[in-house]
Amino acid sequence: MLYYKKILNTTSKEWCVFIHGAGGSSAIWHKQVKAYSASCNVLLIDLRGHGKSKELTSRKKYSFQLIAEDVIEVIEFNKIHEAHFIGVSLGTIIIYQIFSLKPNIVKSMVFSGAITKLTIKSRLTLRIGRVLNPLLPYMTLYAMLARIIMPKKNHKSSRLLFINEAKKVMAKEFNRWFKLTARLTAYLNRVEHESNAAPTIYIMGSEDHMFLEPVKEIVKLNPRILLNIVPNCGHVVNIEQSEQFNEISLNFIRKLA
Image 1: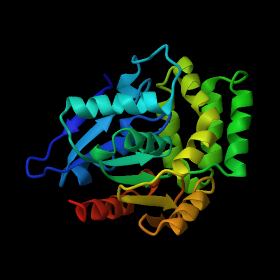
Image 2 (image 1 turned 180 degrees about the horizontal axis):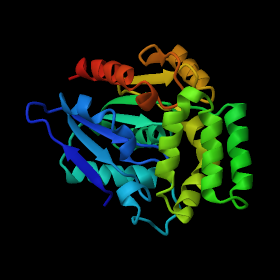
Image 3 (image 1 turned 60 degrees about the vertical axis):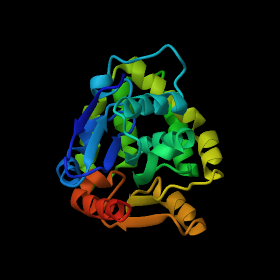
Image 4 (image 1 turned 90 degrees about the vertical axis):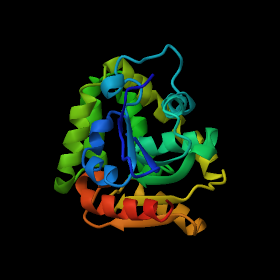
């Protein structure tokens, strides 16, 4: 089973489950733990091959469904019947998959740096990455991608945190996860046409040049979905503008409690 950590709030029945992105770990939520645990029960999870789940590997070909099933196993083991799911970057796709498999356990979804659709720029970036993957050390490739996605000076703290966390991931495991990007376009096209009944908010940085515009398109088509754009902020809002992220997301969750 995946490594997880629970922080209980004895006065609340609400659960918040945090899902990190590829190359990260539950450590990327360190600026959320205090704020969230003051009013909710918190479940932090390290995905397979990451953080303290580093040794949990599989011979199976990795898929978003396999990774989502890992998370569902932890939730069911802890007898959590319903939760608010908070995800960042590729973690948002895992939450989409959890909702597809077990919609009854998803009370709401909070997405930071959400990946909803690949633009020409993002498809080209990932394609170049896949070409270079066999030729470069995985950390060189990861650092290059992190620099492309989070290029500005004010993105430095989140960029360095993700790079440092990625150093804990084994090369073989990184390659398994990176191969998932080849199936992203097909997967996201399918998700786009599925009905989404769970209350959803996107909290995006104004400088998230890779992923903001597709989110705007989704929100235009579905007025039930909320979008909050945080100024002077890149891909990882929960780190770069943690106080705003916490305030916006917790206000959203409290209205659903």
